[in-house]
Image (cartoon, rainbow, N blue to C red; front, side, top):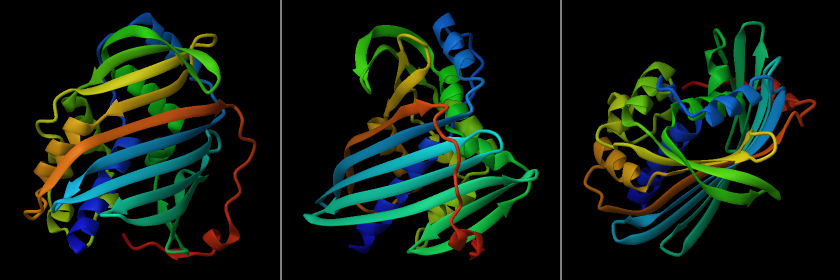
Length: 283
């Protein structure tokens, strides 16, 4: 059971890397992607829901993990609220965990508030680099800049509205470059997993190749309303790169999708007083 919990924690960390790491490629994109990027340049706020699904086996035991992330964000002055729920089924034993996180600007700095096991912690980051990791509008824009080999493949109804579907890929080098520059690695240290704490986490992307991505753009205003990755093959390689101490792991499904549920629809984000009074988080 300890092995399963350890590998489960590693998988959740990998998922969060994909959620908060975006890559900025330099290739010229189709005009439709450029138009969509321009259409969200002046977004004041937005809401989104991200879902990550994992299915596989660890030590011969079936494991299913579903992660749901609800995100509300205001761009200026920056503030965000994130709620994370993780439901796992490990050999028929179900478990649910949830946590909350807030962030806000304080002058030129970023203040982060974490709720861990019902207790609040806070951390102040000098400068505002952390803002971009939690700015979902910027993440959507950068993914659209980075996707290559884009082609329109049809249309669907997303959140009740018509949306055009575009498919492409994100390259391994794009992910590696931005992750190496993002300073996100200190957020994903996991107890009892030495390789994950001491290795250069950039190397987890070695050999993953191109990662398939699909983007849906609202047919009326050309803003993104959904994007998703099929990370199944990539996570197989990433877990191997991490070195999981001999655990026998098979991966049958890893999908991540983000649905943008609204633009310019958040007036205020209130930080709980208990979070403001919290002790310093020792990472």
